[in-house]
Amino acid sequence: MRLIALESLADHAALAADPVNAATRMPADDLRWHAPDEHWALVDGRVLLARCSVWWRSVAHLDGQRIGAIGHYAAVDAASADRLLERACARLRQAGCTLAVGPLDGNTWRRYRLVTTSTGEPPFALEPHNPEEWPRHFEAAGFHVLAGYRSAMVSNLQAEPERPTSDRFSIRALNPARLAAELHLLYRLSTASFRDNFLYSPIPEAEFTRHYTSVLPAIDASLVLVADADGEPAGFVFGLPDALEARRAPDGRSRTLVVKTLAVAPPYRGQGLARLLIDRLTAAAVQLGYTRAIHALMHDGNVSQHISGSARTIRRYALLARPL
Image 1 (tube, rainbow, N blue to C red):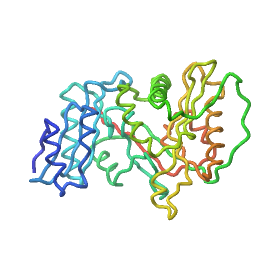
Image 2: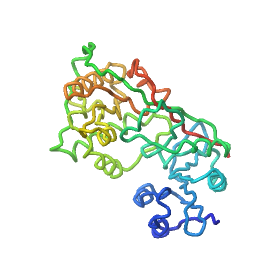
Image 3: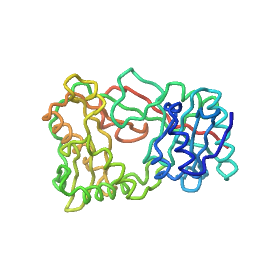
Image 4: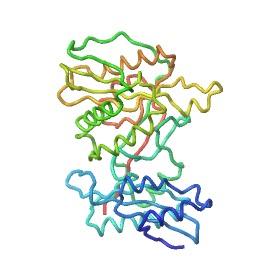
């Protein structure tokens, strides 16, 4: 059994290509785009037992801590996880970090968090999922919960009368004919709206565009709504059909709307725009035949908790940390 640093994409590709590693392989593109400072693998012969990447050069800040991120995580058992996580923490400590945070693929634009509890509702589109033992891997290695998140289900989706709001807001659907311009607009709104979010750090626009382009085949443009105020972009809400539900359904249709992203630019907060976007999205979804909605991956401290109203929690997630 050896713990090795994979120093090139070719090293990773050689392990990933072996069929014996189907459960632990990861896309090579993730390494290329996410650019970790190091990527580690625990191997037994040609078998990949565990893997992770670490970042310390370009990560978020938190209360004076120097954060190191552990992401691209997978492990086949607790013993392999313990050895890998100890090595990752030692490397981050050596790099000068004071707090290890994981699982976090470099920043919060990418995959992060672990599912910790569930009501048994099936996974939904764009939701992170993991074996149920992975949170215990981190806990056994001395990690504690740094932040909590939840997803909540509205089981009987109904359009509500719109609440009074400013006449300055106009709402329109995403225009697929101007996709490049629309993605640029969403990037600008996202970076402005999320810059004060917990553990926020920026990503290049090219990566943002690549990510959203990859999910476009699963979206309905009428479920992505953009708000303007006095001719300026003010916010957006990104909804999409639950493609995983569609795969399970006998008729191949999804009847569940996933409310993935809600963003309001700072100058327009507190004016009812977030509620207006959700109301308009709900009305559009009901007209299209959706009967349920999932408000996805809400941070426990975000105001979006209030917008989800009486929706019942179906999943909880955690981001974990360990002092170094």
